[in-house]
Amino acid sequence: MIVDVATYRDGRRHEVPDLTATLRACREDASAADAAPSPDPAQEEFLWLGLKDPTAAEFADVADSLHLHRLAVEAAVAGHQRPKIQWFGDTVFVVLKVLEYFDDSSSVETGEIMLFVGRRFVVSVRRGAVGSLTEVRAAVERDQRRLARGPKGVLHAVMEHVVAGYATIDAELEQDVEEMEEQVFSPSRSSDAQRIYSLKREVLEVRRGAVPLVAPLRKLVDAGTGASGAPAHEVSHHPVDAQALFVLRDVLDTLLRTVDHVETYDRLLTDILNAHLAQVSVRQNDDMRKISAWAAIAAVPTLIAGVYGMNFKDMPELSWHYGYPLCVLAMVGICVVLFRLFKRSGWL
Image (tube, rainbow, N blue to C red; front, side, top):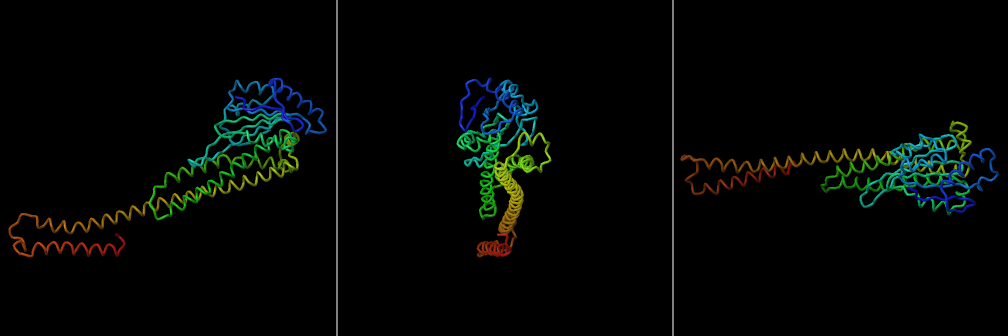
């Protein structure tokens, strides 16, 4: 399904009357531009096509018109890919995990964004319920400098948006972990094991999205400094200019900080879970001690009453006028002494 499609030239958006013709023109113009580069790349028109959950048949025309690599197309259609940045000839294929935090359920939902970035085109493929690029497109259309950088500017804007989402979730997770820590170590009794485990699952979702992106993003940053060791054709077709390098370095720093925090949350939640289980064990032992103490106190009057409840004629004090109150007094006295002893020892 096509979400949005437009071409951009001279910092302005232009609607696309015939998508098939525009796709082929973008490919032909890119080939011509490679043969005779424009002195001002900012004047080059490029296409941005946004798709959501396309089928193989729906994506076939786009792939054929833009000569997209078969493996990248299969990955975009199938989904469930690991975050990565790959070069296929003169096209960059980028896979990003998009994360969104929901306050009402304190849960993290995951989606995917896959980008095909060429000289004259950007094809964004979104899979899942989260990860809309509507805000990103609107922000790019308002920013003449990003539009002037063409498809690369779109790529950088999308990556910046995705990593900024990681940082937002990082702050939410930090608050949730702190609340969980306070809850576990509070005097009140509660069953927190399920919530701790659910929170660890959310942290795992963030790790799955953020950690694999570190290496390819660092490679892209290194390509801009010439220190990546990437093949020459990769860097030449998709250079990172000085302005974009500052943006990508900031994105990488944010990503690394998020990864460090998330790994800390994971270790801390493990410690919190262990502490909670230890507390449960201690409370169970405490409960058992209290039960045992009360059972011991209740055993004394039960024993005395049981003895005098037996049907024997010659039992001591049966005919004595004060035998019954003395027996009751002995029961109460022994129970009081036992209660004070158990209280002093901490069993009650």
